[in-house]
Each structure stands twice: as structure tokens, then as C-alpha cells.
Amino acid sequence: MTNHAPLPVFERLDLPDTGLARDTYAFAAGATPAFVFFHSVRSYVFARAHARHQGLRAGTDYDDELLFISCVLHDIGLSDEANGDQRFEVDGADTAAAFLRERGVGEGRIAIVWDAIALHTSDGIAGRKGTEVALAQAGIGTDILGVRRESLPAGLADEVHALLPRMDLGYALSDAIVTQARSKPQKASPLTFPGTLLRHHLPHGAHPDWYDLIAAAGWGDKPVGAVARRRAETPEQVGAMFMEYLEAGDIEGLVSLYEAHAHFVPTPGTHLVGTDAIRNALQQLIDNGARLKLELREIRQVDDVALVSNTATLTGVGPEPVISTTTEILRRQPDGGWVHVVDDPFFS
Image (cartoon, rainbow, N blue to C red; front, top):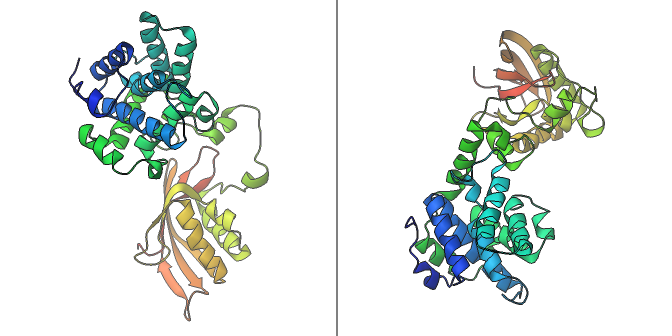
């Protein structure tokens, strides 16, 4: 067994002291890197704390051994031996099931562990399954994202982290999932948790999102309702649509002209990232009655990227017009429309 965490941890953390629990501990310690193993054990400790907080009793309301096994093996799919062709959660669930069958565990108990591992990234589903499945996800969520950490007993997290250091878990775990997905893209289909992670590490448009999949379906479906927005068919049209939406006070129209993680500089020295922050800034312009005139100076387009510079005259935000030379980077989206990646009216 790789000595990630010595067996005295069983006593220090009062882990389930059964032969199967110790076998599971040894298997996970030998198969996974320390940051994964430590996370898995901490997840059990936090899951057990949540159970106590809810008044649930081990042996009566839930099977403590199954909860331990589910937590300690929940990321076994990130190990070399469990790295198959399915998303890591399912590879891990299948590996855990095989491990338990070899030790004579009954199929009913195996099914609980399988669900807990396969569904641990599935919000809204795991919590509706059995108690062990829900508790496992709760403990895992606490350790990875701090969900419900306020309900933990005082000092517990510090004690556990002293024994089992975090080792920058959130980023290390994300990197492990992406590394698998890069070598085996079938492990990260677009609408899965691994697919969402992988999308952040690939060039824009290389990994489709939901709307890209609709556009590629071949059925010719067109946007309706909230997403029924005109597209800027050329880079030049973006400025014209911005002026139109601003004058109409159409905040959603304005926001539709930006990528989700676009950069925007509403005033010198103020740098915003993301459509939530951009929406707030643009809403202030609307509330102030601002008007904008854009006159195209230069444009350079290379494939799906365009560099645009306008002379901008902004009125309604002060006693005098604000005149600036803009620098804007636009990108063509999978649906053919152009939107901002960077919009800086003061970078000239």
C-alpha cells in the first residue's frame, strides 16, 4: 500500500474498522495520488458529520461501511487502472463494483455504492437516491466546494486538514479530469461535468455547448423566446446593434453582444470580466440615459477574429461628451454571429 496516510488515521478519525473498510482504504491509497486519496477520506469524515447534524444514526438510518466505501472510492475513476472509455464517475463506479464483487459483497449493497460514485457530480439527482448516496455527495461537496461547511462541528475541518492536507485539491482534481479527457475525448461528452471542464481548456468553439449542439443537429431549429436575438452577421454590425440596443434601453440585447467571459472597460481603470458584471455596467448607462455614437476607424479580420477600432462619442454620463478611440476584439460564434471578446473604449 502506498503510504499516503498511515493506518493510525483510522483511530485518529474513528474510521469504520472492518476488514472491508481497511481493504478499501488500502486499495484507494495504492491506486490514487495523495491529493485524491486525502480528499476521498476527508469526504467521508464530512459526510458522517452531516449525518450527525441531521440526526441520522449509523447502523440504523444508514450503512456507515457503505458510506465510507462510497466516499473513499468516489474518485477511483481518476486512477490509471480505472481509466476506461467512460466519464470518470462511471469508470469509477464500475471499478468499485468489481472490487466489491471480488470480496463477496452482495449486489444490493454494491448498487448503493455504484449510485453514490456515478452520481456524485449530479446535483439534484444524488440527493434523491438512498441516504448513503445523498450523504456521500454532501461530504464530497463540502470538501471540494465548501458546500454546507458552516454546519460542520467547530475545529473538525482543521483537525482533518492537519492529518490529510488539501494539496490545492480543487485545481489538482480539475487538472486530473482534464488530463484524462484530453487523451480520451469520449470521457468528456459536451453536457457532462468533465465536458464542462474540458471546454475551458480548449480553443473557443472546439468543444460544443448546448446551443452548438442544437445548431449542428440538422433540424433547422431557430431561436425563440428569450434567445431570439438578431445576430451581427459581420463585425461592422456589432457597433450598429450596440447603439440601437442602448438607445432602446434593451439590456439583454446589449449583453447578447458579449461572450460569457468577455472583458469590458466601462471607464478608465475599471476592468470587468463576465456578462454579470458587464450587465450591471451597461444597465447604469441605460439608467443614466446614455447615448453612443460609433464611427468606424479601422478593422482587421483574420478568419473568426476581428480587431475593430471606432471613434466613440458618449453623451448623457456627464456635463460634456466623452470622446474616445475604442479597441474591440470580436469573435464569430458557432451560429455565425459576431460578439465582443474585449471591449475597451479607452485602449487607443
